[in-house]
Amino acid sequence: MKLLDCTLRDGGYYNAWDFSTDLIHQYLDAMQASGVDVVELGFRTLRNDGFQGPCAFTTDDFIRSLAIPSGLAIGVMVNGSELVGELSPRDALERLFPKPAAESRVDLVRIACHAHEFEKALSAVSWLKERGYKVGFNLMQVADRTEEEVKALACQAKTYSIDVLYFADSMGSMNPEKVGQIIKWFRSEWNGAMGIHTHDNLGLALSNTLRGIDEGVMWVDSTVTGMGRGPGNARTEELAVEIAERRGKQVNLVPLMTLLREHFKPMQANYGWGTNPYYYLAGKYGIHPTYIQEMLSDSRYSEEDLLAVIEHLRLGGGKRFNLNALDTARHFYRGEPKGHWSPKAQFEGREVLLLGTGPGVARHREALERYIRAYEPLVLALNTQTSIDAQLIDVRVACHPVRLLADCESHVRLPQPLITPYSMLPDDVKVALADKEVLDFGLEVKEETFAFSETYCTAPTSLVMAYAFAIAASGKCRCLFLAGFDGYPAEDPRNTEMNRVVKQFQVSSANLPLIAVTPSRYDVDKASVYGMIK
Image 1: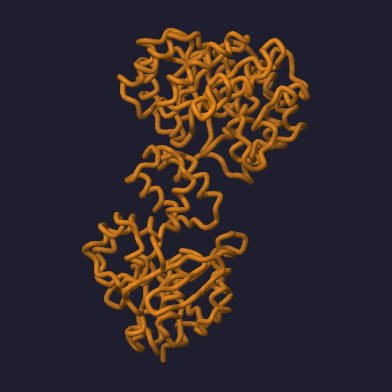
Image 2: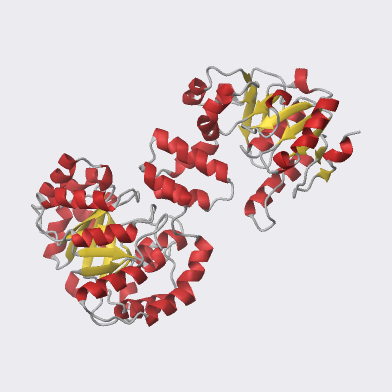
């Protein structure tokens, strides 16, 4: 049985593979003491897009600069996409591995590829084996493959002298039963060594790995504290104990525990890997975990945005990560800004009460409702805010396209008209809102800019708060009262972003007072709804 630790490769998705030399040396010593057989030091790649640390390239010169403990084998990973792209596999390999294994410290080359890349990438096996390297393949997203497809992959593999054939639970969606089933499918055609690489979306990475061992898998992966893309992997500090028990050997975990305390626990607190409810949902619905990782690292995404994007990807498919899809989720208004409805008829000269989604609305509901009944302001609610009696809300506003898709059924049920940039939305959103009374007010997103026109506006972000501010300004209302704009704790970056929008609006040409009538952390004038009721 082989225990492979790939912390410096898989964990590099969080810190751009920029591990210090001191950390790497301490890590290598800890791996040897813990009974790890192979460490995958990083990727070997020809791509160079933006700054990445040494473990993104893992060159022979870099490896030679390290003091590697005796008996510890060294591996690197190559993305199969680099072997099936513009360069021929042979040309790519000659650049990636200019020296034979006898002149390199690399023992194992693992090739990570999708099923559609596998057949063409297999030609790399012969080239690498002729130069003395051990070769493994890591087949990604196998959980979605049928029995026939898995067996076909195994048939292709058995015609090559692959040292170990891995399958990866790329989406973290497998359970132990599924692991056992996939191994049986592979075993019907493949008799060589098998490996498993698990992700921890559902909190099952260790259980799935142990089930793989019970089913005869001989190579297993882990990372220190589970550090890896998305929620991470099986944890070395746990798997090393399990492997030692099966081997009947004692291992020294003290260096590993010291490594955790001095380096990896602080990094985990900073970067935040590990499973959580969002990764759990991604695993459950087969969504690529990098979508979650990217959103969690971006303060623009609120909890509601995260859930809305997950729902959109669940329905529309999110198995392959595409960074543009996240930008699309926030900014996919089509064409020039336009609209067919002017807010002036309803807004001009009126006091407007804007209901946000913060807890202040529900907490001060009775006072807000008394104020509305007594003074009859125009009541504008963000998204599907329902803490106020629905009969007291005049109109709703929503603009985030993914959020609209997720909330479309609620919007159709709610009685109020909906202000949204309807004519600029994708067709699937329009279809979803076909049965809704829509007031089409266009939106252009332009950094640090507020501008107000008859039937459309420009805002610095697609946040619905900014869109609502611009609607009120375009409609020439007299005053904008804010309820439920509680804000976030001061250290939360979302509070900074939202406050930046507030300040940009206040210095725009709007000339519209913003007054929070329930508690708010934003830099606006403040009053109390209780003092407004005579």
